[in-house]
Length: 171
Image (tube, one colour):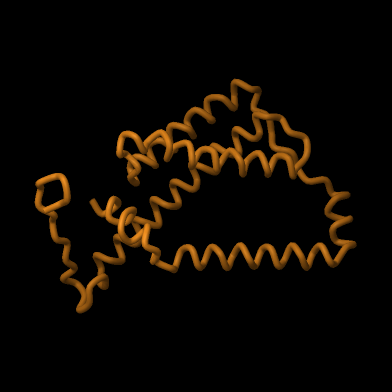
């Protein structure tokens, strides 16, 4: 019985594989999870880029910083808005992010369809003449790639995730 609901919990088994979590059913669930993650990422990125472009910033670093801040504000804001209604679920997040993307898509033409700034070629030539900065950029890129791989492939294993958040997602 699910805690607090009085309803029985349905058991989901995977008859296609000899071990739990293997087989066709598990692969389909993983593929659909990846699809929903990709869709949410595209919606958040669309919102961030369109709103940052609407600010009409002239430099690339300012634009990238604005897009980063907007994306984080959307993610945190959606969680804060959905939390009192106990709607922090995959469907709730995707729905709320879709609403923010639709709002950003409606605002962008109203602001005159401003384009994001493009990097100047002079900047790229200057960057190429400083090999230390190229090495630093490479190290940062590899670090981000490593973080992405660890974040995607490592299951949550801290007390908070195991005893509270994962249980709420499963419910």
